[in-house]
Amino acid sequence: MSRAKLLVWISRGIFVAVLVTVCVLVFGPFGGAESAFGLSDKEAHASAFFVLTSLVLLSFPKMRRWDLAWLMVGFGGFIELVQGQIGRDCDLFDWIADCVGVLVVVAPVYIDRTRIAARGQVISTPRRRKGDRSRNLAGSAAARDVGVMFGDGRGDGQAADGSHAEVCHDLIPPPRPSR
Image (cartoon, rainbow, N blue to C red; front, side, top):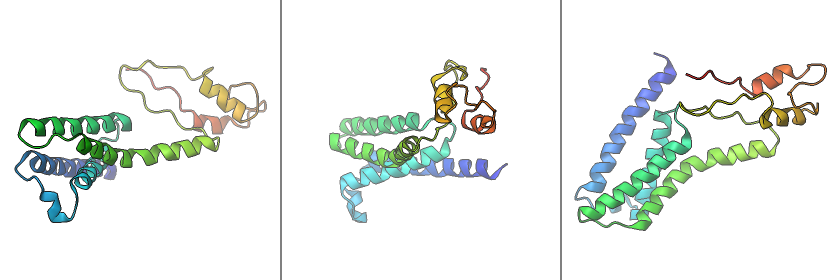
């Protein structure tokens, strides 16, 4: 087993342990337990979802970040709904604190991607999910943009003398075969 796979499995184990701990704390008779750690209720929610989101992103590297982020946001809403049913407070602001914890993990990635795009560098396309329509990148807007970026005006990503061929092959990955 490679080191990367081992780290993924370790992070999955830690994620499950933290998830069980969070579920016991939010569904059990432990209302106000966060004050023992010097945290307010909202700080505890944001911190818990920061840790959970960080671990879920490490645990499932092949899934898209936004899919996992939305899953965590939905889990936060589910917790609040269940707490309302079991006699604890169902608080919209607790859910908003959960969302803040998720956003603090996911936002820096998109800020960095925006900075890269603002510098004019090409950002690789995300992996396609099973069932997504495949696209041929030749002749697409991305290929034309690469061609324009290198100044050849042809839109195929290569200069007239072919000097940028290696660079463009690195920037635009070939389309993946559909399964």
